[in-house]
Image 1 (cartoon, rainbow, N blue to C red):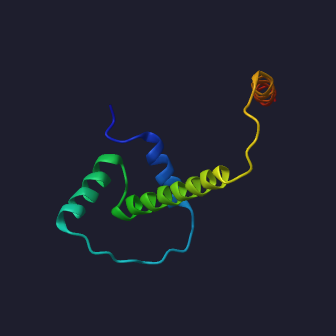
Image 2: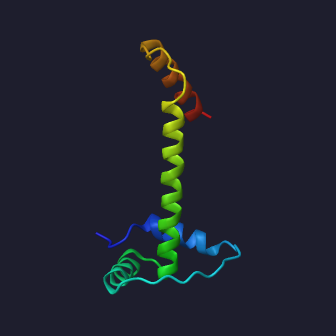
Image 3: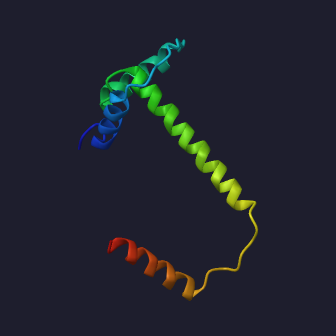
Length: 100
């Protein structure tokens, strides 16, 4: 088994390949956290600690977006519970998209 997921490496490469203007930010970490970051970089195929930190930030942004969407859904108007006809229609729509 690989010490990293190939998809993570591809995602990191794709983000690094974009020509996005970047700012520099310096952070201070205790030795044990720096060691942890270094281990993650080496063991999971990141090219640098910056790539690893950027990935953590992107994942946190995704998590916050998902949280917002879930809270929006939870506060939306209640609807009738789905029945067999709902799921049949849903399956038909999915199958229709797969056939395209």
